[in-house]
Length: 215
Image 1 (spheres, one colour):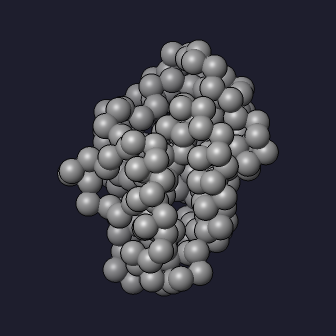
Image 2: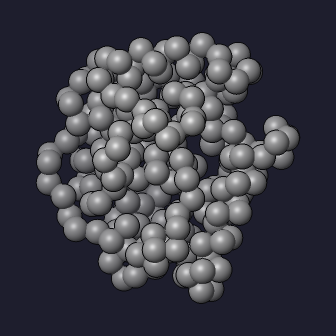
């Protein structure tokens, strides 16, 4: 999973790159260069195409407006602070930890979801980078694995991992939307729900074609 996440916008039937882009967003906040790229005309077009692909044009429009509200440095700092507050907060009631184990009914960090994801990663021959300290049930790792399963055309693996994610991401996304509303991560939560719904419906295919994008 060392490949750069999204360097292209998906066609209507290709959600692989959206999954990889979302994985990057949930793993770490954008730096100023990434914000500048997303604020550019190609970047704004790319975000709106993602919104259209997921049936979330309002969320995409909100993201475009948020990214353009203020200087690139100010926007970057605001998003970085929000990422820390939401995903790295010490107090559960004030944060929304992106770990399956905390939302799948077990309610404890490093629960059974970790072992399930380790099995998924082995099956897909994926390895988490040594400098990544997150457990395998982190949302970003699950999204990256889901993208790779689709890329490998592993239908059963896609279905299994999607089912695993649907068990907990609804509650996670609802909590994230409550906490962040129309903010950057609240809108990413809307993207996440739509992405998984599209994949669960069997509408995601991989065609290998990519359109150039700046995000």
